[in-house]
Length: 158
Length: 158
Length: 158
Length: 158
Image (cartoon, rainbow over all chains, first blue to last red; front, side, top):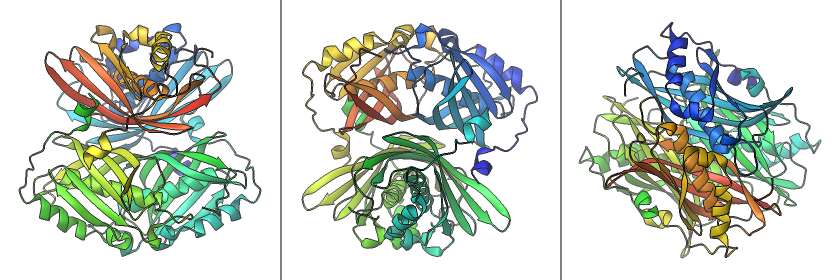
């Protein structure tokens, strides 16, 4: 039964051009460039954001900063939702909650958002962050996020 | 990668008598009896609580009350953590967050808690609630919960 | 500045008959009757739910059950939002998060929901629970909740 | 009663040198420098983090990025807890939940963490973010955070 809950349904995107739409929007987020974050997988209802280790995103002990971890989790979840939207809609984060389960130690963080429920107005996403180093992979954060779809407001315009 | 996050590690319980310990503790919760809730599976790090439909646990539209859904999610998560504890420890909920994704319509609700991280002091649990009716199964709530272990305080004594 | 955040704006209800509308809806929730919960203050954007101590709402140590605490917090928050809605709208909980800060010991619990932001679609509410006994008052839980307004669906009809 | 919940108790810090200890630790967080964030008020159990507007912390519409908002909220809350700790303890975020109630538009964001409950092991903090511009002040985010105190591990050493 854990599996049933964890294995998300396959989603059919409303916009076949969802992948360039996600990648274009991500590229227009200066804060992601400031951090050095990039996009990984962009699938319908599932998006990864990757953060390579760099001193500029660390805290006082030299590990990835928890705020950086939260920021890429928020973005991965937001684009997981956005990937299922029609082309003329944009996305806003309503709220998110994240548990930090292990320190962010490693060569890179990978945040993955997976849509749990795609509603007309609200989308619920599960977000997980892993720290990768060499062959190891530590599950360092997990949470859920709620997003709202705003129709008739292309993401490209403020 | 979604799978890696979702498929929890196999846990070895510190107390081989974890199952009767969980069932005994659950049986001493009057509120669960008031609601008519029972225990389902009790495995190491994974516990189910089942709530059969009854008018007494409904809201104004005749569906399962969201508060009842939250209560069995809290209990399923708490016992998932407790199942991994040594025999002389008790558990307290630190916090939980739950997204209600669909109304609680059906013959019964099944709340399942699955441990994501078992630390010495804190345990993090993912909780999901499904509504079952006939052959259908709707994923109606999902959340995460943080619990604290209190050593040297048997659960049987206040 | 803490005060500015904490002191909510004064809200003008869309429906002058908000109080009987809230009280009528609450009275139609069988789960609240099962628990023995009643309404306290019903003001625009601020609603209290009171739970007198009774063995039927306790956990294994004889205190108020955390699930009962969460249930009345959810209901207080939901009606705080609902109090600001027009007469032809109903409310659904999107999600809530609650920190349990102290055990529920006392003669009664008082859950209070206070609206932080009332949007056209979404309302955000802060929820606090106090345990009262004699002259003392312990702040035992605090959280936030998101609710959605569904227009054209009177709360009186499923 | 809302006031009672919202007006936090006055806290007596365990370490009279709490303010330089907080300011020193903050200064050792490279991610805060990357963002351009600075400390505002540092009082016992109450800490502000200020983020002046700069293109490098924005999203695709030119407003403050939600991830930047979350990051300064996390840090403000963490130091609010840390301000009450003894000198030989450090702090880790267990989890946080934040509702974004308005877009981050303005000259600067001010995140404020206020301790709700200071326990021996766990501290619970309420976090609010306001966007300030000219004379206006918009309450744009609110949440709660749980932190753990680690004794005998000076914050200055990893």
